Image (cartoon, rainbow, N blue to C red; front, side):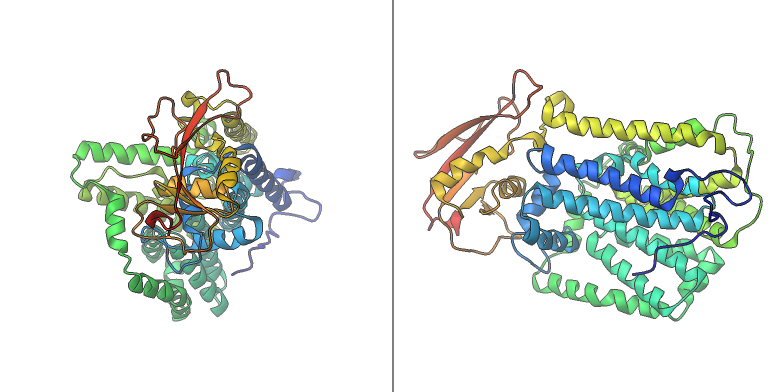
Length: 514
């Protein structure tokens, strides 16, 4: 959408030294080094998800169920862009864990590189630019939860980073092409997740306080942005209308109870905010704040970078204030840490831009990077440990370690190669489909989406698929029900963990199978 290969001639000399400083620029701070580090992080986590874990996680399972067909809209709670990407990818690599790993880490890789380009436009020193990108792994929603539960949010953060980068480029050198690119990023963000609308609103308000960005928004070429964004969004809006999907009602359901007390609301706000910003804020504060005398502070003004820094500051401050007012006014405690993506994704870029301005960071960067590495290695170790030792004290239900693939021989022997399987909920259905790619999976009661019919070699209802918990009681066995107990593949865990399932064949003309 825009050219993101930004040069920094004021910094990098041909011989690889920092201009005017006589310091060799370390490899990890060079563009190729950043790409390599981020790429390695993504590849390691993708390998765990694709080859070490035994099943897909809960959020992935919902999307696995939905993408049995290509639709303009699936459910009103989320827009469809993630599902479109997943559907297309699964036509190539299949419906199993690999498709989810590829898509998740392709999106996270793209987001990290876009954030890096933003950092290069806001921060002067390449070492702080790189540190800002690596610090994404210390935002707990990115560094930990993104491996387990996020789907549509990963599309949204790509849209946020891309829109911010494009807007900075517009302020530097406006063109019709860049305004069109901004419209495309807006469409991607809004079709990725509705939360992008909150980012967009706060971004506009934040820009109005900075003259250079205010001029960019008031430029008549902003109409190009609106037209480019309006095209795909109009198609999606029509789909919502004709499918009678109520986004407002779905949003209200997500907000949940709106009669909570003030103290509970404030507590949920603080917990969600801490859950997003930690451990990044704690690590940065611990390393860079004590006894900081401001040595090496940036003295020269740089209007372009300083304006961008101010916009990032405004987004963070206004976003936090508006969110606090909104949750208190509504009275909801259903505030999740991941919701702060819309305002805090670029928090590391802003923090290091401010740190560069106040100084006192040069000698402390190695210690900070060491702590980041320790956190990243710890998360990797936990992800590796879960399939090897899926103790409930470590991972609860440990759904990623449940050996659903062991159902396949029994199901295929009884029902043939292309069965219809009936599950109790979307999570169960999606995990079944990932484990048995040739099956069509339906749900007992699903008012919003049902996969289209197709020729089937047999039909059965499977219960207990989201078991993974000891002593869970299953429904009473039917006349032809097959009981299955499967030992988990956990070589380091003794005694082993077991899952119990029930397999009940149904006639193909049964209403559940249609």
